[in-house]
Every structure is written in C-alpha cells, then in structure tokens.
Length: 235
Ligand code: SAM
Image 1 (cartoon, rainbow, N blue to C red):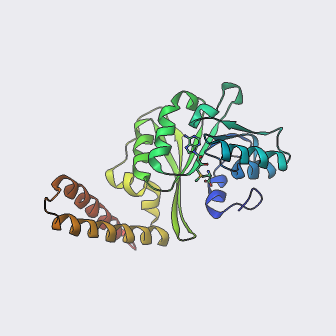
Image 2 (cartoon, rainbow, N blue to C red; image 1 turned 180 degrees about the horizontal axis):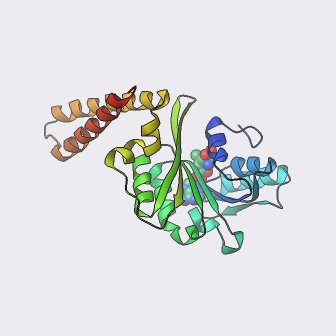
Image 3 (tube, rainbow, N blue to C red; image 1 turned 180 degrees about the vertical axis):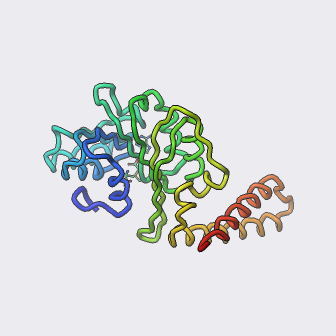
C-alpha cells in the first residue's frame, strides 16, 4: 500500500470523504489517506496528524515526495490537537486504531469537533464503545461498512452531528444499526466467530474455582444478542 494505491480498508474510508472536504486524518502514519485524496483532487485541504515522531516524519516525507505541501500538512500532535481553527476542518477520519483509543481522542478533542460535519471512523476492535460515545454526544450514524481484508474484518462507521438526541438499542450498539440491517456474508461470518469465542469464554468461566458471576452475566447477555442477530440472518 502507498498513497497511490490504498488498501481496500483505507479506500473505503476515503470513499466517505465528501468531494472538496477539508480533512483531518488523525493517526495518519504515512499520510497515505490524505495524500491519496489530494492527489485525486478529492479534498481541498488536508492535515495528517500524528503523535509519534517517526510516523510524523514519514507523513512529512510522503507529502513532500508527492509535491502536496501546498494542500496537505503533517502535524505532530496528540489527537485532535492537530486541528487549528484556521484549518476550517469539516471532516475527520480516524482509522486503524482500537475503538477505545478513537473514543478517547474524540472525547479529548470535543472543542475541535465544533465545525466538523462528518466523522469517518475505522476501529480495529471495540466498535460498541465508539457507537456509545457517538450516541452520547449527538452524532448520528449515517452509514456503515464491513469488509474482510488480509484475514481481518474491519468496520467503518460514518457519523454526523445532529441537534437532537439519538438512541440506539443494545443490539444496534453491538453490531451496528446499518450492518445489522444489511447482514452481509462478512457480517455473518464475523458474528459466528464472535459467538463461538463468547461460548468458549463462558465454558472457561464456569470451570473457574470462583465463578465470575458478573462477567458471566454480561457475556451471556451478549450471546443472547448475537444469537438474536444470527437468527435474523437470511430472513
Ligand atoms: N490511519 C492509518 C491507517 O489506518 O492505515 C495508520 C494507522 S496506525 C496503525 C495508527 C497510528 O495512530 C500510529 O501511527 C500511531 O502513532 C497513531 N496514533 C496513536 N494514537 C494517536 C493519537 N492520540 N494522536 C495521533 N496519532 C495517534
């Protein structure tokens, strides 16, 4: 993968960036995503935010190599602190990290989210906690994708701010309101696998010297939800 040839995962994230956007890609590493979108005239301006010096320098190098310095800037900063008011950022992408870290970045950077019209998030794990944060902060999920690449399953969540409260059920928070309605083959395979994992965990907990009753109840509730979702598949 490079800026000219994105992975299917990053290309799918990029496909949700509206034409002409002013984009901040947080945790950008090599800046492949903003560089690709700038090369293809899809964004008018881009920030590649990185908290670690090595990836930040990779991003700088990539932007210079592709002669994009007029439109794309690398910034060494923690999370959304990479965004300055003069950037007039309207779209934020955060991809390739755990859901809890993405949630933390959003939580810490609420001031920078003021003018943002769209979040495009690709958590590697922990999608539920991210959806819960979006719900609690009046972001409505407007689209979702699930895809399998190189032996991993990835979910992409697109959310936009709204003025009223939004409510998702426990099932929607777990599997995603759009993904759960669509029930693609990748989705079914993911939840079959998750069900098997949860059932193994239950067996292990039941065999423990001190049975962790609270954990057991939580995982049994999750199993019920997953079974409900899978029973719906094919209907
Ligand atoms: N976004 C790219 C992608 O999806 O291919 C790169 C993902 S890479 C696995 C995660 C990157 O996020 C790393 O380069 C890491 O340094 C950066 N990162 C982690 N926490 C961060 C934070 N709080 N602020 C900015 N960048 C962060």
